Length: 275
Ligand code: SF4
Image (tube, rainbow, N blue to C red; front, side, top):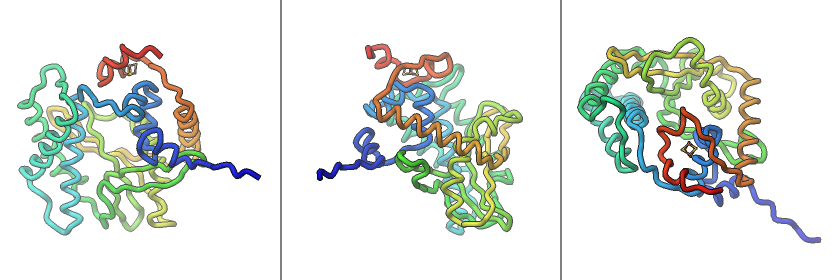
């Protein structure tokens, strides 16, 4: 009898993308535009441009990460200069990946002022001083959530434990305050991550939430809770399963849209693509 070799989903992912896992952002990139996914994750094309809003969000994340790492190590909260320094370190590192494309009326000086305002609002907000035990900052968790699909790798911005719950918090930077229901619209990622985080303290209830920083003239830092919804988790898993089947089948095509294309870093290879 001939034994057939069975290749694991992680091994297939490694062969296709160089990584033996999938991330939520990879799956959502595929959902946004399958060709963009292929350029980024299969062909590994460098990004020609990076939008300033993406760079700004990553730099604010880095500053918040620095803040919570200091708290977790037992140090006092970092001051404004220290947060700004973490912000610009991250900004420079993004700038090495591609040319940063500024928005209308923006330049480095205006972004410096926005960063100062946003980080001041953050430092003064309750969200910068969680009550409870800090468990993880940019915590990497991975696990198999869907049979036949590679492990999901999650990087969770902040995890802490209160008397009542294990809190899982994701930071977002936004041009304006989130309206009612916006957290629910974007809940899939946190809901999926809840499947990995619940294993950290079995039996403890989970509290999922976004912390949204606005880049407005008077920045706000607000919590937006997400309700646990098993049916939505099951549905998200089905989406991931279908997307993975499409990736395994090399199903890539452009999905042009007014939302995605203007800021897409792969416009040139996209125009050259002929199927
Ligand atoms: S330019 Fe538009 S269609 Fe082309 S890869 Fe980017 S998002 Fe997709």
